[in-house]
Length: 65
Picture 1 (cartoon, rainbow, N blue to C red):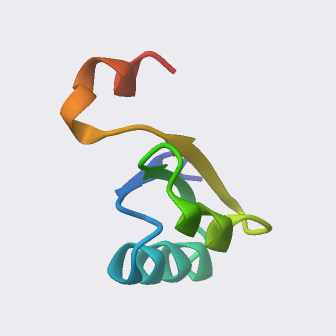
Picture 2: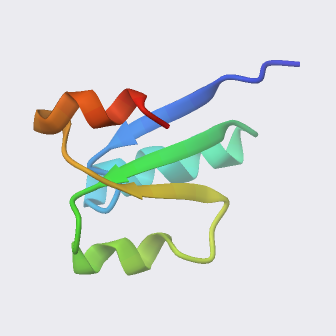
């Protein structure tokens, strides 16, 4: 069994959300990176997607979890 987690940046957007849903449908584990305070993050709640607020530009914090 593959224990890898797919990190999707911009997951609250149209394309990122579509990618997340397709990965979940394939049985993959998904962690979503969404800008802090992005109101579109609400679209990801209630799914099997683990959401984190952050920004790719602040790279150091991405690997501290």
